[in-house]
Amino acid sequence: MCPNFFKRGGDMKKRLIIKLSGESLSGDSGRSIDPYRVKDIALEIKEAHDLGSFEIGVIVGGGNIWRGKTASEMGMERSSADYMGMIATIMNALALQNALEALGVETRTMTSLNIPQVAEPYIRRKAISNLEKGMIVIFGGGTGNPYFSTDTTSALRAAEIGAKTILMAKNGIDGVYDKDPNKHDDAKRFTELTHSDILENGLEVMDSTAAALCKDNQIEIVVFDMNIKGNIKRAALGENIGTIIR
Image 1 (cartoon, rainbow, N blue to C red):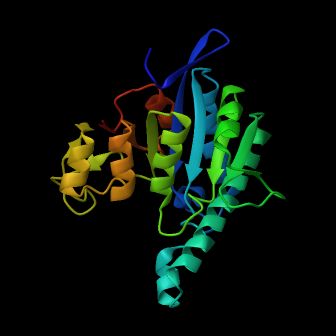
Image 2: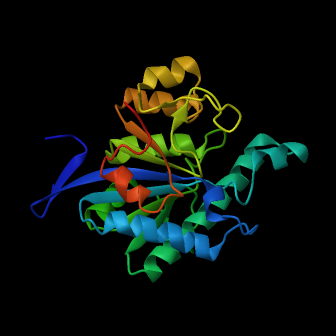
């Protein structure tokens, strides 16, 4: 049996992580969090969840609210800036949770920072239990430690809960290219790469810590454009819509 499939009630369910950028929640509205954009994303995730074939965890960045560049310009100490970024991811997680619940999808936000008034603390076994019960689990607060990105959080949580696929839902980017497609008309999109390709060639898919974690734990990454309606479901189903990294 493939290790990223779990048997429950006679069904075979694939466990996966969806990684969203914080900027994807703001859309083109100029707001930090656009409720209409958040609802659209929730509908896309619900569409994949409703297939009944997947146990879904979600990690969302915080760049729509707080960015390291801002902290650097302020002369802020790195650890404090990173903790602010973790809090931003929790705000985004709560926004997405409420949008999913408004659509009738049972959802839990679990945070690596202890904020019991707003979310459950992240406990690995509890997260797995929630997934097995059919809930979507949103992981907020990053790893709970400074100096680590939400890309690294995605790889770490995937390894911890036994998910063997990370769907990297990009905001307007439909895969991995050999050079910036916005600057070079002859940029080539890869359909398949290895983890070694990412690490050795410095391809900007995720940071090197996250890429190494995925390589060591045999976690595949699917990079695709989330702005095309239905693409989250297509990526979950394994359709060739972007770049797959194994």
